[in-house]
Amino acid sequence: MYPNSPKNPVRWVYSILFVLLVIIWSPSKAQQRNTPGINGDGDVLGGSSHNSGGYTAQDGWSVSLNGGYESPLGDLKEIYKGAPTFGVTVRKRMGSLVYSGTIDYRQYKPKESTFTYTEEDIYSYTATYGNYSGIGLYGGIAYELPLGGLVNIYGGLNGGYMITKYEMSMQDGENVILSQSASTSAVYIGPKAGFSFAVSNNVSIGLEARYSLGIVGANYNSREGGSTTPGFNSYAGNLFLTYSF
Image 1 (spheres, rainbow, N blue to C red):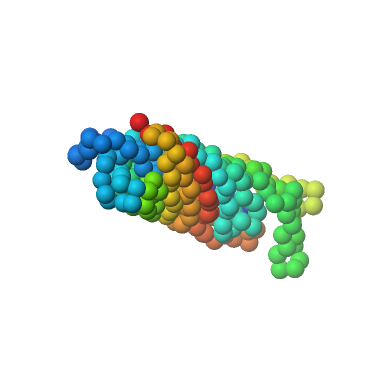
Image 2: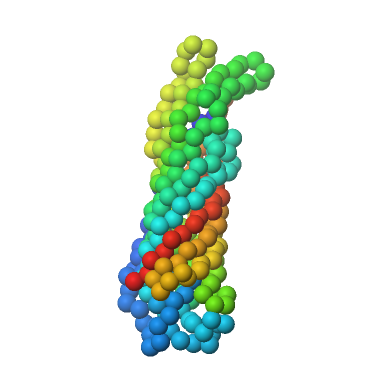
């Protein structure tokens, strides 16, 4: 089996991203407090008894570098093993809501140098896969709550596209029966949850878990036909280093 390109682009994702960008770039309307402090994302805070640390989060901007590990699920898991991920995220806080835009990268390597498939216990062929790389482009929204002191917890949702690239070939004995190299795009919808901890007025660290629902994506085909399966599907853990300004 092998991945194949999706036939129909999902245009409503662009609408979601557009709305998120409009919200992110709109001017903040929340009232600022006079007493400065910090919160779990490193954003500017004002004096308050809202939590045990005497701080409450203020509206503001931040940028994060993140690195972590991601494991594929579904049919991809049968072929590829997990890999490190790297990315950059820009956030804007508006009250308890945090809007974000992210770009990240991963590259899965195949579990074996070649795979052997047998159909009806008669016909067999081998398949060779190249690395499976993916660039994520998505916006997000999260609801954040203080958890005492300088720690915040949050939960939310990311939505956008995963642009992937792969290579594969199939052989029947010494004859190549199929060779393919292609770039694909799949809708990315991923619930997320995490926490952050402030280490200075402008810097915080955080840990986040994500799960990709794989709503729309690739076809996986055999020699006898094909069936549609969910697209890019994975779970991941990421460590964030955030600077607020």
